[in-house]
Structure formats: C-alpha cells, structure tokens
Image (cartoon, rainbow, N blue to C red; front, side, top):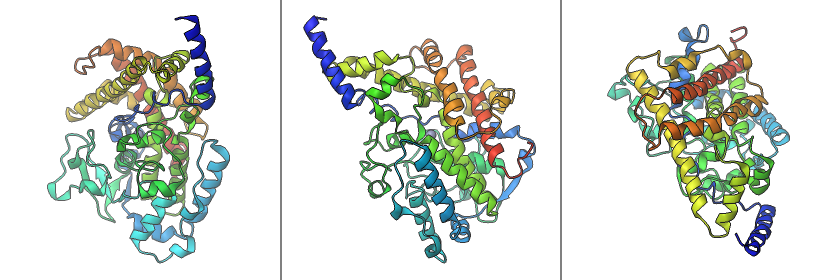
Length: 442
Ligand SMILES: [Zn+2]
C-alpha cells in the first residue's frame, strides 16, 4: 500500500474507532437464520433424564390466566425487585419504562386476556405470544390430529424449520404432565418468538413502548434477526473490538436468564409449580444458547485486529473481505446447527440413545465444575467455555464440511459437538438445581 493511502486510512480508521462505527455492517446480517441450538427440547430431555427422580415427577397444568389471577397482588413486588437488580448490575441494560409496570392491585379481578397483556408487556416480550398450554413430543412420537396445537397458539412466526407444527400437543388446565416434558417444551419457547420485534426500529407498536432502543446488531428487516441480541452474549471479545463496536455489549441473555429464574422462584414459592417449571425452561434456553460458540463470539476464527481491519476496509469502500467474513460465519453457524439437529433428531427417531451427542447430554462427569448456576456463572463459566473453543470448532467445521455438506460420520466434529452438548447438559442441570424446590441434595 502506498504510504499516503496508508496514513489516510489510519486517520479515517481512528476517527471511525472513536465514533464506534467500525463493524457496523459486519454484524448486521450475522444471525439472521440462526437459532443457537436447533430444537432445544432435544437437548433438555436428555439433560434432565439423569436427574434423580425426574423421570417420575409430574405437575398439573395451569393456564397463565389462572396463575396471574392468583398472584396479581404479589407479582408487582417481585418484578420491581428484578428491575432494580437489572438496573444496578447490568451496565448495558435499558431500563423498563415505568408505564409498563405490572398492574398491582388494579390488576385484581381483571380478565385473563388483560392479565396476559399486562404481564407480557411488563416483562417486555412479544405481545403476540399466546403462552397457551401444550407440550412438545419428541421426533418419532405422533400427536393425534385432534390434539395438535394450532401453530399460532405457540408462535408468532409463520413456521420454524426445526420444529414440526404437528409435534405440539394441546393440553388442558388440570392435565397431569411430566415435569421433564414441561421444562423441555419451555426451552424452545424463546425461539418461538418471545424476543422478536422488540426494538424501537422493529416497526412494531411494542417496540415503540418497550424502551430497548434501536436494535444494536442483527438485521432489523428480518423478523428472526431481531431476537439475536437477546440470545447472543459477546462477553469475551478483545478491548479493541469493544472500542470499535461498543454496541456488541448491548446484549440481553444475562437479563433474560435472571428475570426468568426470578419468575420461576416466585411461581414455585407461590404454589404454582407448573409456571415454576415453564419459566425455568425459558431461563435454560438462553443458558443453552451461550454454550453455542457462534452465540458467544462475534467471528470465531478471526483475530481482533483482522476484524477491525476488515471493518475499516469496508468503510473505505473495499467490501469484499467483510462480505466474505459475514457469509463464512453465517454458513458455519448454520452448518453447526444443521449437523446437531439432523444427527439428534435421527437418533431420537431410531431410539439410538447411545448416540454420542445424546450420551454427552446425559454425561454428568463434569457437573462438579458447575453444580448450581449463579449470576456470574453465565459470563464467567458458561459463555467463557464456549468462547474458548470457538476457534477450534470453527476450524474443524471447515475441515469436516468443506462444501457445507452435512452427511457422513465425522468423528472429530462429533467429539467437539459432544463436548458442547456435555456443557449444555451440565448447565441445564445447574439451573434446575437452583430452582427446583425439591432439589436440595439432588
Ligand atoms: Zn435462542
């Protein structure tokens, strides 16, 4: 490069670094198609199967309206405490506007529909989520046609590639359900739309009210992309990357995990175990997502200097390196999930419980390293471990699937994904041990 051009570029780069503009486009299309793990219940059923007594435990289904109707005078204090905690402990948290506060005594006696609306607004999730009663059935287990839940009762999305509409079974209030099915089903719910369209620039009425501000990254024009900052947590990038792209720190998995664990504890304490387990499953979803290296690192396999460099080139009009980096990371993210989903759903259908991924989820040999999930574990253990293996996994994906072809047996790939599943299993159990009122000593 000519000396003059280099110094011009340096000046421009440092001014963009100050403005925080670099990498803006780099991450804008990143997570448009990615879920974290595909079909979380496939992971959760295995993870909880090895918890003592879990296979036999049952719980009685209760509608959200019944739950809220009973707790509407006590829930406001719990939510208020949570809001105070989030404001004090999460530096990039956007405070919940006071107008969204759950009704308190004014909510007493309200009908189920207005209670639901008040609740979803107070916890700032998608207002279109009906939160009806259902359980998901594993691949290979049929649901009688008359009991299939209408898809719109579960999701605000038109469809979801990894979740068959016919796998959701309608449940009535009072039905007795396996706890394992309730918690596993709930671990898919955040991917069914809880976090879609919540930003000021999402083009939705709720986005204007919720106070989250503009979407920090991900494509605001793709519905699915809008949930990315809730399901990804970039806690382990270099200082250089944060200086160049501070908005990468505006992520919400820690807030979601803490909120849903608080709601779970509250529901159990108030004598509503069905909702205790359902909220536990919601919290577990985000913990499981953070074990996915593409949810814990912006660009696995790319060093900080290179990241900032290709961002800078892009700002100078040299788009090739950035376009290539974005499409590489997007493809690999999708290939990893496709591999995990196809392999695990095939194992379920074949009743092959010895499949290495399913076995890894039940492997408790590493549970001692995280018995109970604490507030700091999300950042310091869960996402730190997946961020640490991101480069290795990324390199192996390229060796295993040079043409992004997910077909054959791939021992090295299997070992690395099994390691991730071992962590998902451990982390799932670590949340349950904290929340389960009968979990002492389990
Ligand atoms: Zn997710």
